[in-house]
Structure formats: structure tokens, C-alpha cells
Length: 149
Ligand SMILES: [Zn+2]
Image (tube, helix red, strand yellow):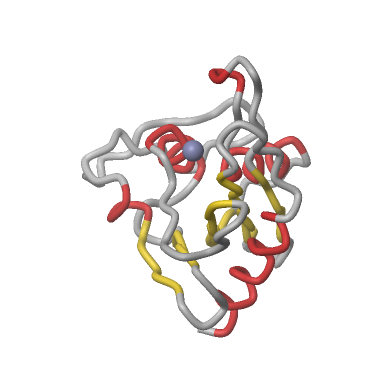
């Protein structure tokens, strides 16, 4: 799907901004909103490792802080600083949980890319099965668990 190839391209651009002096593993993400806006994210490491933030959550938190709550897909690319993009880079468990707070598990797509020509597409449910999914968190503080397990 051409739209997803474009999203992978945006994730590759986002990866250039990664701050990863400790792992040298650069990750970029591009989050597509249903209105067509794209929020980029990169991993941001810290000497105190627990303060590190993943690219996916960076993109989500940027979007949510701008009032966006309707998400369609996220593209993720990652790889070693020197070697580049050699393999698929999957979201960590924490990022999958954040996605489940805001995204429909059967509609939201997670695109793991190596290039614009080579990527995989999964639903959030495939990436995080049997989770306590939330349907439609919003900025009024409303979130509730769905029963679609
Ligand atoms: Zn993560």
C-alpha cells in the first residue's frame, strides 16, 4: 500500500534525529493520524537508562500533546548507526501498551519497515494479543476497557 510506503519514508527521516549515544541503535517512527497528519518520533536515550524514550512513544506523546486522538497507523524503522536498516524493528512491550490505550486493536496498523519497498503490516491485536484494550481514550480523561478480546 503506497500510503504505508510513504509512512516508512517518514520514519526513516525521523530516525535521522535519534539521540542514541549509548546503544547506537537508531529508531524512527511516523504516526499517521486519521486526518492525514503525521507525527515523527525518534528514540531519545539517557545516561540513566530508565529515562530513555522510544521512537514510537515520542511520536504518540507529541501527537497527544497536540490534541490528536485518532490514529490510523505507525511505521517503525530501526538499526545500528553504522550498519543502517538491516532487519525489522518491532515495538517494545511498553510502546505496544501505549498504543493499546489510544488505538483500535483491529484497525490500527503497525508497519515494520526496512525500506519503502520492504515492510510488514500487523494489526495492534496481532502485536499485543489478549491485552486489556481501551477503546477510544480521549482528552476528557475518558478511557474504558473494551471487551473485544
Ligand atoms: Zn518502545
